[in-house]
Length: 117
Image (tube, rainbow, N blue to C red; front, top):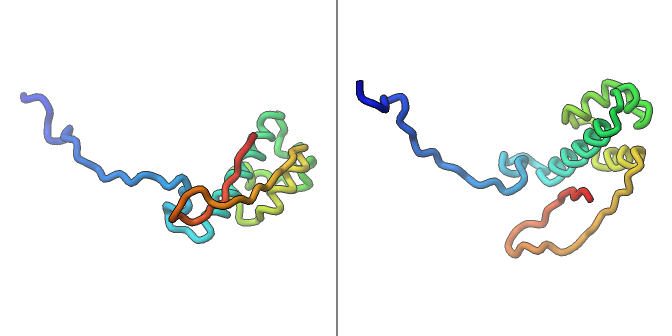
């Protein structure tokens, strides 16, 4: 039997590099805000994990219900605004700084992003 059957033939696949924002790559509206919310929620979930909080304890600290904490750590964010997420970070003892500056990328739209220290 010859080596390399027809099932093992590799086909070329077109790959499009990411813009760095999966929401923009998918063509979703308000992609910058969606990415910022996802990044903020990820940071909150990371702090909850690092502190070994149960969802019940996290709910007490954050002033949320346990189901809302569950939504948050799973990335289900429709009920969370950027403002609300920033306040939750403050409740976790985090300072939040917002920097506004001209875009460094010519001929590209300005963006919104979250940078953790």
